Image (tube, rainbow, N blue to C red):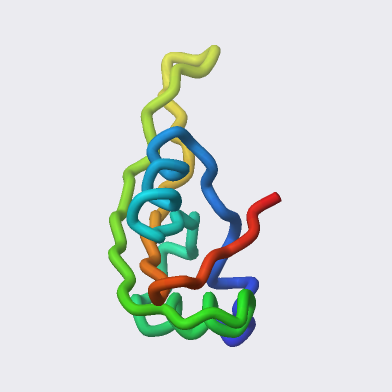
Length: 94
């Protein structure tokens, strides 16, 4: 994972993520499950040219899904990163 775009896959926009960005200056990203907090911090700083104060991460297991056969499928495992920016800095999502 040398490229920052391999680490940060996309930004998550939901009701909870919007409240975090407005009140606490935190933004939620879907990141590579193998990336650690230091790699995520450096990638966000390179992509958006902002100062990152903290990174919190959470791993999510993929859900089981029924298929036509008696076997079960599974959605992909994924990792969420909540990034706190320096006071006064914002990421323009639009």
